[in-house]
Image: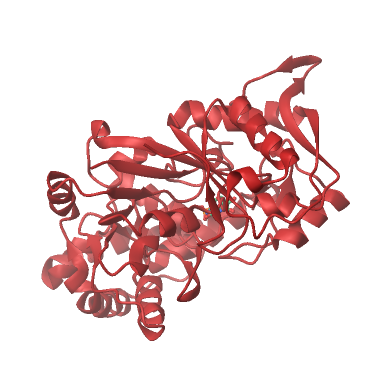
Length: 427
Ligand code: IMP
């Protein structure tokens, strides 16, 4: 059986949760492989509406093992809260597995995230302030503390003491902030460890066993390709890779195991936080999209910047991920527009280009070149068959397929699980 990676193809918030929730009806394993609780994956299913930050969106299928992979940074307090909330609402979390190799978000990471972004002044990234960047920085700097460390309190104390000495130096000498107490952090994290211990395991072995049994495995991406530290709008990016390639590294399987890569795109574009967004609409059309779609951050509540579909960025996204298919979400948001624009090129220094520049200075100067398509001005939310969509809506999807060079497997016309139209088969 195959491994399908579900990848955010724009700046995050594309609706990956909804797609994973739907595919998880068949999947035996779902793995979150990157990011942390900066993600907010919304799922609306017969059990209600949920916004998951760390727990994989397969949790609603009691047959599915849900793994928080080694590539995720975990805030244990947020995770415990999420588990409690799910249990309160009748969702069983006994099949949740936490990779013993996943790094933890510690209290100093959250403090440093705020202090660092404030110190950037006008160049602030506008992070979610969840400690994500500092936690990933510590992972590669080898100052990280991992979930497995919580299973042995004595070794954990030795490790925490040396790491906290270093972090307190940064807090006090660089930022003139107060140091953190070893005892308080230790006691707190020991409590988290006791609570989470039954879930903390070597996830790679479980994954291998599932592959040997030929079970369907989903790799659940977080954030979006244009927030990737290499291929996104660096430095206005997140700090772990949302790409399909990271699906292997952050879950613990080999690249040849992935058989399908599904790029999830909104039918338009949104972005939260600072950084270039060539098709941003700072006008009433942008406001209309925001209000119709309620484009406010799931995690931070910040208004999202809205704009037309950017096919230059979409092609870049396809290129660096190797999408085999796409899911186009939120088509219904465009139901009322008489005309729709798609960005098919950028004007940069008097020339038209068809690639996504690496430099944010260049991207900031890029002016979108638009192609205009007629709107359909009819409701699509009750449509369940692709052929029933208005001809203009089908034309819009066909044009996106041509521009991205990738077939659409799914088209979504609303938040509910049932509001997904399968256009073509994934396999
Ligand atoms: P961080 O990931 O909290 O460090 O934030 C870095 C940038 O990524 C900021 O612009 C955030 O708004 C953005 N970001 C992080 N996670 C998400 C997400 O799940 N959806 C959309 N934007 C995100």
